[in-house]
Image (cartoon, rainbow, N blue to C red):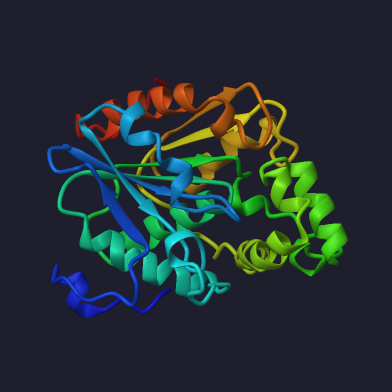
Length: 272
């Protein structure tokens, strides 16, 4: 478990190395939604969410180093370090009800941050929303980890996923700039191991694409094994990046879930 700073646990604000959490248009919001991006992405994938979500929901983006406005800062490949640093920043903002959302790599990080915060008796999230990721206890091992593939193999894999712009994959100069970031994110995911018995106490909403080859719909309810509360699953048309192609519907679903479990302070489960 990460070694959390005592000052933070006592509710004292601390300086950060360089912030990974940014809060957007949330001055009058009654709850905060912390959004964790997928591998290779950054905070900008959530740029429409403040407009699409209920005004009572503030959006806080969580961005790993080395990308977008933090380009050139050291990349993170160790899950415990990432969870510790993100968790401390989330705790700094936990002065009102809040929830965590993560897609793909972000789902793993959001779960681990929620578990770490609960373990250290700081204000826990009211609910957790995981997207585009199988239950963490079902981690699949591959003969060759994706992060160790050759450049050609790695680019071919990214094309199959469909989330990386073609202009990046077709441009050698952009590849040299961006592939190290994407590889680092894959190493971060590959290094994660779920400790035995790790659970959260809040309800979990699982989002998934019907055509997503990275998830098996019959396994998704097994996220329920990782919470003391309830679990529900919402499926969308589309593949792994359904959160882009169905962004408005995703935000509507999240908004309904938050109204039930954060904004009304309830921990009972019910699909929106």
